[in-house]
Image (cartoon, rainbow, N blue to C red; front, side, top):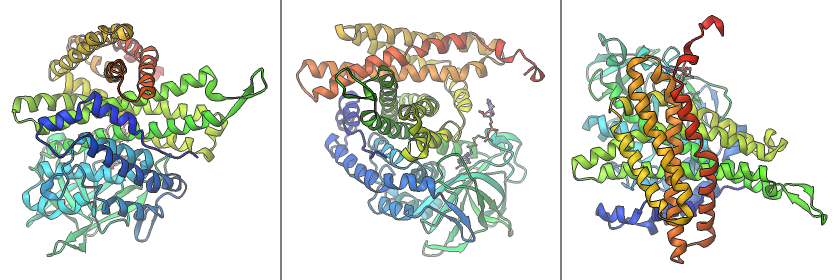
Length: 592
Ligand SMILES: Cc1cc2nc3c(=O)[nH]c(=O)nc-3n(C[C@H](O)[C@H](O)[C@H](O)COP(=O)(O)OP(=O)(O)OC[C@H]3O[C@@H](n4cnc5c(N)ncnc54)[C@H](O)[C@@H]3O)c2cc1C
C-alpha cells in the first residue's frame, strides 16, 4: 500500500500563481497572511495527515465503528488521532475569532481539509459535520446559544451532527415528522432520525445535534420546518457536560464504505422528550439548514477531490512498479509505459487537478464575499459562490466515481482484491454522490435556484469570465488551439442556459431532464477554465525563465490532455440537454 503525500506544488501553484493569494490577502488588509504562512500550514497539516490519519484509513475500513451498550465505539486509534487534531488547533482553523477560531481564509482551509480527506475519509467526516453545524449556529443562533456551544464546537472539544434524514424523509425534507413541543425556555423533541454521520462516538465529552423538526401547528411542507439544537449532555452551570439528554443512538448501519464513520439511527425523546433549543426563527429551519448543507456540500466536493487524489497516487505508484511484457532487449516493461495505462493515469491526474482548481476558486469567492466592504461586491461574490456549490458537490463527486474506478483498473486484479487498498477508495467514494443531496438534487438546485430563479445572470457572468480567459490564451501560440476549444465550451454553456430558460417554461419535465447534464457540462467547462488559467500562468513563467520547470511543463501537458479528453464531454452534455425529456418520459412505468 502506498503512502499518501499532499500535492504541495500543485496547491501552491494554484493559490499563489493562478489565484494571486498574496494580492487578495493584501487587498483585504490581512498583512500577516501570505503564501509563506500557507505553505507552513500545509506542511504541518500534511505531517499529521500522512503520519497519523493515513495509517488509520485501512484500519477504519477493516475494524469499523461498532455499536454496544454504551452507544458507538469508534475504531481504535481514531480518538487519539482526533485528539492530536484538536490539540494542534486544526478544528478552529477557519472559524470566527469571536468564538476562539483562527479566522484563516478558506483558501487555506480548503487545502488543509483536502489533506484530512485524502488521509482518512471516514475520520475526517466528523470535523466536516461539526464545521457545518458551527456555520449554521454562527449565522442563525441566538447569542446565548452561541456563547454556550460555539467555543467548544469551534475548538473541536465537542463535535456536531446534522440530523435531517428520517425513514420517510430523504431528498424530500418537507416530509420530516420529528416534533418539537415548547416547554419553558426550551423544547421537547421526539422522533427518529436515520443515517446520522458520527451521531455517536466516544471521542469527545459531548455531541451537539442540529435537528430538523416540526413545532405544533407548523404549516405543512418545507415552510413548517424548524431547526433545533439538541446536546447529548446538557451543559451544567459551569458549561461542562452535565445531565444526559434523552437522545440515544439505537444502531448503526453496515455499509459499502466509509466504515470508520459511524452511520447512526438516533432516537429522540423515548423517555419523555429530548431537551432542544430553537436555532433561528420558528418554521424557518430550512434557511438555517441550507447554511449547514451548503457548507457540507462544499465539504463533500473536497472529500471527492481528496479520495480521488489518494486513489491516483496509489495507482501511479503501482503503475511504476508493476512489470508486464518484455522489450526486445529483454528488459521488463513497467505498465506505466503502455498508452492505455497512460490514458487512465492522465485522466486521473488531469481531472484531479481540474477539481482542485474549481475547489480553490470557490474558496476564493467565499473569502472575497466575506472580505468585501462594498455590499454590491459582496453579493456578486456570494452569487458566484452559490453557483459553484452544486457544481463542486455534484460534478466532483460524480467524477470521483470514475477516478477511483480507474484507480482499481490500473491495478488490474490486484485492484479488485482488498490487499492494495485501492478498492477501499472506490467503495468509500460511492457515498459522495448520495449524501448532502444526491446528484439529482444538486442538478435541480443548480438549474432551479441558481439559474432559472436568477434568469441566468450569475451563470452568464461566469461564462463571460471563462471566455475572457480563452481570449487571453488565444494570444499565446502554444495555447491558441486550446483557447478555441475553451471558447466553444463556454458557448455550449450559454446555449444550454438559453435552452433551459426557454424550455423550462413550456415543458414541465425539461428542467428535471436536463439538470444533471447541465451540471456536468458546467463542471467540465469550469475545470477547463481552471486548467486553462494554469496553462497560461505556466507558459508565462516558463517564458520568463522562472519557477519549477518540470512542474510547469507537466502542467501544460496535463492541461492539453484535459482539453483533448475531458473538455469535449461538455459537447455531448449539450446534445443530451437539447434532446429534452421526450425519450426520458415517454414510457409508462409498466413499459419498463
Ligand atoms: C453513509 C450515509 C451517511 C449519511 N449521513 C447523513 C447525515 O449525517 N445526516 C443526515 O441527515 N442524512 C445523512 N444521510 C442521508 C442522505 O443525505 C440521504 O440518503 C440522501 O439525501 C438521499 O435520500 P434517500 O436515501 O432517502 O434517497 P431518496 O430521496 O429516496 O432518493 C432515491 C433516488 O431518487 C432520486 N430522487 C429523489 N427525489 C428526487 C427529485 N425530487 N428529483 C429527482 N430525483 C429525485 C434521488 O436522486 C435518488 O437517486 C446519510 C446517508 C448515508 C448512506
